[in-house]
Length: 104
Length: 203
Image (cartoon, rainbow over all chains, first blue to last red; front, side, top):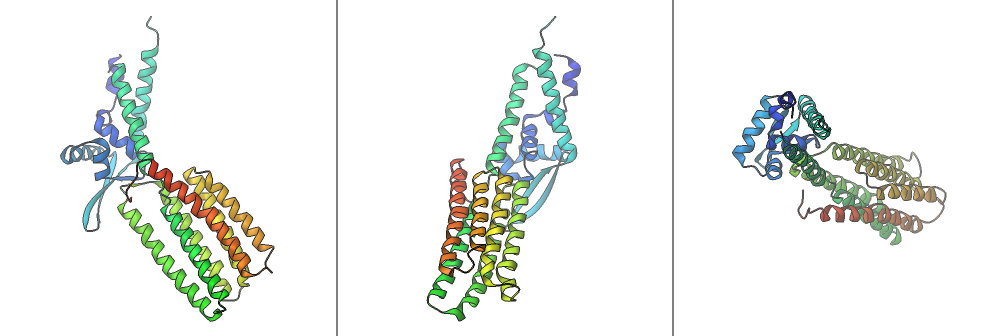
């Protein structure tokens, strides 16, 4: 495994929970905090931390609304986030291809 | 990063993408409502015409249109408000249903009332618009059954267009067949598919 290949992996995307969040958000227009919590199996605090990290990196945007007088946070991926996720996927594929090559 | 870690990441991505797709599937409830509302509409008009209560027909049509429009709005608004996941296909499809419904009100109701053309043409236009709505929905949701629904609607429109001189009960039965085959049956199939994916609750 080439060290430079590992270094190219985006640390923001690389974390499993954040990767799961971006995988969902790239598929849909938006997802609520509650849905992401259930999908990733995270606690409120843990998920908040990851969402804040993604938002501060510009990969997602969060919109707070009220549904039946209860606050709801809807998250959606930004263009920068899409690019980062797809770039991460591409790099993973390259690493896999590299690992499959017969060693000389 | 070893092979197992990479496979784990790829597995996470695949699992989450599949979950998001499954959880944002169309429930079919809106189509069931549209089909049921239209069937009630046609049956009520047939009964009034059958009882020769012609003076009641227009007020009944106005009342049912308004009630259905309001009920439809609340059903969609409630589903969207409570939805945990929003998707582009759903958003586009809601827009298609909305514009087709508006067009149906105009062609099926407003224009005949203002005597732009005869009432006998309104179910023809309604069936054409149903066909557009259903065919487009089939493409958006990749649900081939709706393609057939669209085609049935257009076939029904042709039948009604060329049998304008037939009595309303005959045309009413034709509309009911279109509604059951075009809306109720596919919507029930879609709803069953939705429930089989593990959705036992309202979205």
